[in-house]
Every structure is written in structure tokens, then in C-alpha cells.
Length: 532
Image 1 (tube, helix red, strand yellow):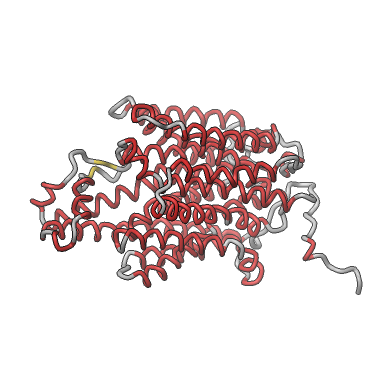
Image 2: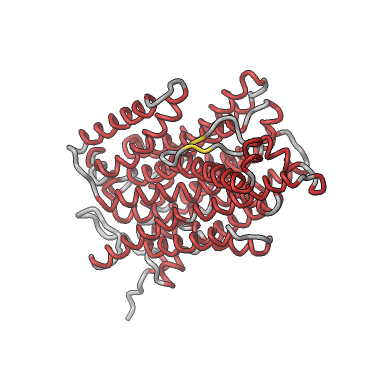
């Protein structure tokens, strides 16, 4: 397809806009807190709306993309991005700001999800000969956008103190750019769509097993965020699983209750862990490293890890073709490196060592997301845009419901346990009023956040021995949280090793083509001369 390079870079610019907006919005939370008097819980809800709405945008978009065409979804995403900005800019009073900003973030996340429902399958279709390489290039735009957004926030917010509305408007620049780049371009059809496969046939490989992974996360979402908002006790949980169960039945009826591919089910589970460790950790790593070192160093380390990710995502072809690692081999190596990086990060005492530890962690998490999408595109072409979009949706939901929440719970639990061990009477004085819990891990009563912040704001000379105990408990809690976080890529390593061994038993990893489809033409640089 003649315009495939333009479509690749249009998709790059679309995800860049999402990264810029995500980073800037995260950086202006303190402005919203000051202007509108929000609690951290309210800010967390506003930020979480971007994760959950992304999931709905990408799954819904993935289901209908092959039927209505990719171009209509790009237009819808563009309009939603603009509407999100307009809605957010109207926040003016404390009485209405929460709802305005919440729904602004919701529309922003939905637009991001809708775009990924387009650009992931488009790039996978345009570059069947090297999906891993080009999907990694596409997703280099996410850390690229995070870098631009973080630097912009550092300069415009911290240094120049410019109004947050002007800062947020910056993401509209790449939004306009991707709109112009997509304008008038012919969009490709997926292999499944070209072959005339119906939606029911595209869901066949997903089946009940694959749908069960997505439905589990949807049960958590509806139980906690929808029904849990106005009901108490076990009722919200039961209703959440009832709604998710209804979705599962619909998939069963569509596929005549096909179980689906067990390999795809395992890949969905692996991506649920990817979302938890990559995006979930990203939500907290700046805070944790800022506590272990200084706030400024935490921001610098966040930018450092994203620079590494941005750079390395252009090197997937070299790793796969020159070093000889298959996509699954890349994923296994990354999981091992992420474990090592997180364990090392739990022991950081200096900025120099932190650069090394988080550098190793950044290398580890670089290839997870796009390479998982490439594997699913290679092995399950009959699913069209459905499986790729469901994969990304599962990752995003997991980030919001498991990764981010779980790490916050771990921080609370480990820090409170350390303080209780050091001085039980002091812990009773500074503990929060209400306990918190996470899934089946039980309740924990954390150190009160306001009291902790009061201690942090004191000059070191003005701190009492009790203040020092509180800070030491938090420090140890942060270190233990990073060690606990390392168990997630550890589980991923076991999964990827199993998949790697499976492929060895069937003759090695290779892309699958829909029956009757001719093999893809070699890329221009790989063409063989006819001359002898």
C-alpha cells in the first residue's frame, strides 16, 4: 500500500497526543487540588476515568472497526479529543469542577482507546512481514509523548507557573497533526475483513476462555466503580459478576460456545500482568523514587526511563533479526530484566545507582505492550481487529483496577506494618480513620496521608524522633513495595518461558496466514535480485 508510511506516522502522532495529554494532566493534579479543593481520592477517580474509558473505547472500536471502516473511527476520536479539551477548559467552580474534569478525562481516554482500535490493526495489516518492529515504532510515541508532556509541565508549571488550561491545550497540537495526516488517506482492511469473515468468525479464536479474562476485569469495574458507588456490602460485587456473566453468555451465543484458543487465553492473561506492571507502576514510580531520593530526582528518573523506552522501540528489528530473538524470546528477556531492575530499585540510596536500576527496569518494560500485540497479530489473523483491541483493553483495565490500586495498597500495608513494629503507640496516633483493602489481601489501616505530609514538610532539624520513625517506616514500605511489584514480571517470565517451549515443540515461532491467502511480499530492502 503506497501510503503505509504516512499511515504509520499518523498513528504515531495519534498515540503521541495521548502520551502528551496523559503526562500533562498528571502534572496539573496539584493545580486542580489547589483551585478546586479536591481530595486525593477525587483526583484518583478523575485520573482512573482515563484508564477505564480507554478500555471501552478500544474494545468497542475493535469490534466494529472491520464493519464500519477505520476512517470513521479516526474522525470520531479526533472530535472526542477536541470535545474533551473544551469540556475540561470549562471547569470553573468547586461545585461543578469534579464532574466536568471527570467526564473530560473520560472522553480523553475513550478517544485514545478508539484511536488504538484503529492504529494497532492498521499497522499490523500494513506490515505483515515485520509486525514486531513496526508496532514497536508505533508505540515509541507513547513514551515520546510522556517525555514531551513531562518536560512541558516541568517548565510551564513548576518554573513559569502558567495557567493549567494553557498547558493542557498543548496536546491539541499533535491532535491536529494526526487529524491532517489521516485526512483523505485510504485505510487498509484486515486479513479477516478481506477474506469476508463475519464478526462471529472473528470471535471464534477468542471464545469463552479469552472473553472470560476481559469479563473478569469488567466484573471488577462494574462492581467497584458503578454499583459500588451507591450500594454496599456484597451486592455490588455480585451485580458486577452478573453483568460480566451476561457479556460472557453473549460471546458464547455468538461463537456457539466455542472455548477459543488456549494460547490466546494465556496471552490475554499475560497482558493483564503487563498492564499491571507497566502502566500501574508508571502511576507510582515517580512518587516512590521521589520518596527514596528527592521529588526532583523522581521526575528526572521518570523522564530517563521514558527516554530509554522511546529509543529502544526503534531497535526491535535489530534484536529480532540480528541477535536472533523471537518475539516471545524478547518478551521473556524483558520479564527477567524487569524483575532485576525492580529488585535493584528497592535498594537505591543514590541518584547514580537509581539511574542504573531504573535503566534496567526501563529496558525490561520497553517491548512488552507492542510485542504482545505483534504476537497476537502474527498468530491470530482470523480475529481481525478484535483480539488486538481486546488485548490493549485488558491491559488498560488491569492497570487501573489491579496495578495502580494494588501498589497503593502495598505501600499502605508495608509502611503501616513497619511503623507498628517500630512504635505501636505512635502508629495508633497517626493511623488513618478508615481501613482500606485490596481484593483478597485483607484490610489495612494506613498511616494518615495528611499527617505524613506534615512530617515531610518539616525541616530535618525540626523533626522529632517520632517524625523520623514515621519517615523511616514509609521508606521501608516503598522498598518492600518495589520487591512485591517484581513478582508480577516474575510470573510473566514463567508464562513466556512456557510459550517459548510450546513453540519449540511445533517447529518454532512463525506468523500464521489465513488459509488461501498468498504470502506477504518481502519489504523493498529485502527483495532478492533476479540476476545470477
